[in-house]
Image (tube, rainbow, N blue to C red):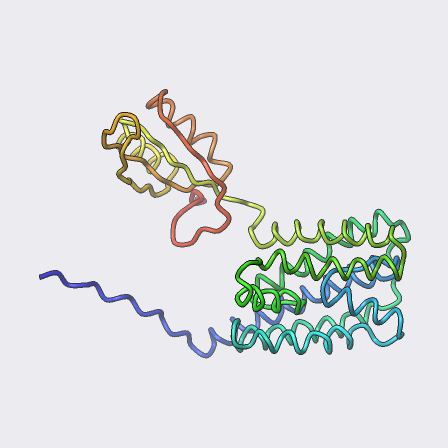
Length: 296
């Protein structure tokens, strides 16, 4: 008889470990909110450049009514965040409310402090700073913009449209509003800021030090695998396949290395088999395997 291995149960965290875990979350959410507020209050707002989503709507409402921006961002976000309760969970909602609350505090602390009057500098550096702040908050399981949450919910109901398409549709109206309110040049600067921020968010979420996965096809797979484990100190996996033309069984060697070790990996593979077929891909997140060499 074959017996299934019992799935290992995750180790329960002690009260002290939980305290440290949530303290780190609180610290990073607070830092992320203040970084975002720097971009908002010191670069975008004084130059009439807006962000997308709820923050952009709040900025325009604040400009028209002169109401407090931080309070508007918090209040307008409430229905959107509550809509995400069922989909994203209680913990996400609580952490999101905390991050938005900290953003409200930060905008009031930094209000009236302008870093530059140059529109291009405000656009570029405002976008970079916004992206850093949002990236930190997203990495810690929270958000500052309720339009993302409503897009997730709507995309599940409307199967024919993706989350990204819904966000683009919502932001189209936001930037059109900015064009009528501030002028179309400011709307174009706002779109540029949004694009820069989105790229920075991707970098923060994916990490600047990307890993690389490699699939190596060679008749000398054992020698290559042993050399990789010895020289690069990373694990390899052997996977069987079949050649499309030859119809013969092939074995591929799969491994994940840091981008700095990729040139050495290629040199190592081709020193053993100059005719080896090697395919590489970017890997944005790796857990449970050794990617980098141990430092002695």
